Length: 320
Image 1 (spheres, rainbow, N blue to C red):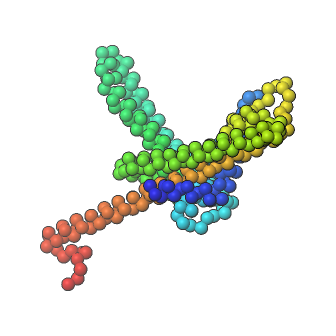
Image 2: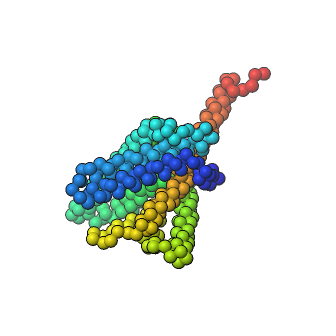
Image 3: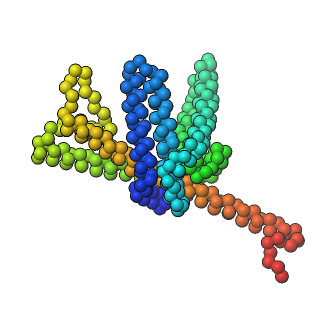
């Protein structure tokens, strides 16, 4: 838990903040362009820009994750360009793991659907449904919980650390088999910490925005439209209706600056969350190593006791 709390130190990692800011700004521009094209006749181009926005988010967050993983391990931080060059390989590994888990989830849904189909049979349908509900509902809920709290939060930093597709799936299975509650609680702690940081950032933005608007309009009487300005601080776009007069120059400039504030408000909790995932992965990796060491010691002790009971000299006994 202490290592998870240390993830707040990521707010001082300028490289990770820069990569996330570049990612959110680029993806936001692509999404806005895609929305404009989807509203018109360029459907294929709009879909392509939407896919490009997803790729930018995947690669940018992976590059920031690589930088934060170096920081969590105590390694020398890499240059942003080096992180961007190294990002495609772990990003593809993460995508492969997510697709594999989604395929398994689809098989589970198909199995439950097939069992539900049996409830349509006359005579046994109602009784079968009563038996299926207490089994299927917890199973589907647990699968959803695992997808949200374990698959992404563990697979992403595992890919950043250099693990391959099979090794990541094996690690996920170990957590489900050995310590599912511990892993879920650690993942929830990371999410809660990030949510707390996001709440603080929202307070800073709201308080600062209202104070700025009060000074600009109430004191200096600048022609600033306050409602659109406050909405833009939280990412809510403002569009001028067709035929309406354009926004005043001061309001238009303020909306541009508000968009930058919104991006900065996303970057800080995003960096804390990604660093928290790194700490989560390292904590689970240490737990796996400790478990493996304990199992090895237990096997050696059992082998020594077996050899002593058989009258043979123990391989681990000290020389006389």
